[in-house]
Image (cartoon, rainbow, N blue to C red; front, side):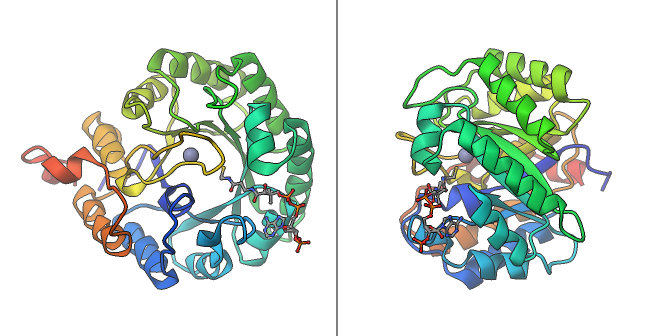
Length: 309
Ligand code: COA
Ligand code: ZN
């Protein structure tokens, strides 16, 4: 297989599970991680270090993280909403933290009970902790509601860029811009990501995180690819959504994202056929959850898998 030139990050075990009420058993989470790794998914956000009383699905975050970081070849990251989460993630052996804060003040207050400014201050403390480890732990600064908010409505791109710049100046190792509630359209995505690439792309890698709530998820990926983005989050079977954003629903579907990128000639390093098979683990453990994805339903075009390999 040719070397990958685009990164597909699985966030199903974090974003995908955070609204799911039924507990996904720990061994099944680990089986899911191992199966995606075997399919060639080298980067997986494996859990979220939030208080279990707020999101019981992540009561096993420490156990999942500890096991995931031992898997050879896997880059295992975790979401952290605050310093306490960062401390727990680092104690579990996570080497890449995804710190989330929202461009929408209203969403940030609801999501992490802080103003955006307070979260920026907390981000600095997280970077100090992570970069101060004997072996530096990386921190990605993830800007949620960067393309719109179901509480506040439109979000000013100027404000998004100001926050992004502050994250980079504070030491972020990566910047991620998220359409948390699926409001974005491709023209808007192209404009924001081109601006981010031109103003900050030289300093840190920039990732894109899209939800398919209004059906424009993959169109937005295409626009971001055109703007030069090469890191994409996605969720197996399109599970997902923020429990603190009204009306939120699933991420773009990992399998369909891989199909889009590979058919455009980009190389993900992922075996699409094996990836689709991983859905069985999700289906078995979440029998009541809707599973999305066109490739799983229709199958890839004749000869596609052989050509991609
Ligand atoms: N992990 C585990 N426990 C944590 C924690 C974390 N990351 N952060 C705080 N706590 C504990 C504190 O130790 C404290 O425990 P105590 O009552 O036993 O003393 C308690 O939770 C409250 O701490 P506090 O710092 O006051 O938190 P808060 O009430 O202001 O809530 C968040 C802040 C960030 C923890 C909360 O808003 C949250 O869980 N948000 C989750 C957002 C999310 O996951 N969104 C989806 C992804 S974008
Ligand atoms: Zn999301």
